[in-house]
Amino acid sequence: MRVILAEDSTLLREGLVRLLTEEGHEVVAAVGDAEALVARTAAYQPDVIVTDVRMPPTHTDEGLRAALEIRRRWPEIGVLVLSQYVEKRYAAELITGDEERVGYLLKDRVVQVGEFLDALARVAAGGAAFDPEVVRRLLARTTHGDPLAKLTSREHEVLEKMAEGHTNAGIARLLFVSLSAVEKHVNAIFDKLELTSTAGYSRRVLAILRYLGS
Image 1 (cartoon, helix red, strand yellow):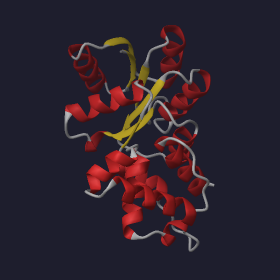
Image 2 (cartoon, one colour; image 1 turned 60 degrees about the vertical axis):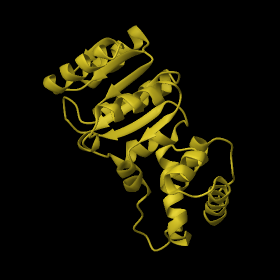
Image 3 (tube, rainbow, N blue to C red; image 1 turned 90 degrees about the vertical axis):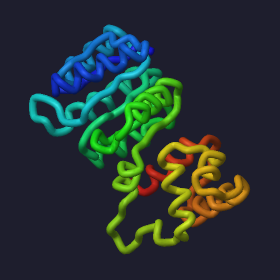
C-alpha cells in the first residue's frame, strides 16, 4: 500500500519508514507537521495516512485536526492515528464521522509490530482498528444519567468488542460464546440505548459512539 507518515519525532518517523518499507509498502512521504501532512496527502493521494495527535507548532491537537480535514476532503483515504494521547473531542468526531477506513492506536500499548501492521492493513482495506483503551475513554461517562448503567456486565463486554471493530463472529470467538448469544446481546444493547439497528458492525459502533457523545 501507499502510505504517508506524520510524526514529529525524527527517530520514530524514520523507524516507521524503515519498518513499512521492509514490509513491502511504499512510503510516499514522511513529514513532521500537520500542514505538510495535508499538503502531501493532496499531492500524492495515498491509500492510508498514519499521524500523531500532538504536532508542531503548538503540540496540542494539530495532527488529529489534520486527520479530520483529510477525512472530509478525501474519504477514500484511510486514517490511522498513532499517539500517546486520547483527545476526546476530536477523536470522537473522527470515529463517528464515517464507519470505514479509520483507526486509533496508543503508542505505548502497541507491544508487537504485528499489531500495528495488522491495524494498518485493516484500515487500508476499509475496516476499523481501535485500541480498547481509546474505546473505554470515549465511552466513559460521569453523569448520573449514564445510559451504560442499563447494560449487564456481559453486554458491556460485547459493546466494548463492538467498539474495537470486531464482527459478531469475532466477538463470539473472543468471549467463548455462541454467535446467537452475541446477536442477542447486541440487540439488547440497542434496545437499552434506544438505538435503531443498522447493518454492519462499524455502523453499529459509530451509532453508539454518536449517541453517547451527544
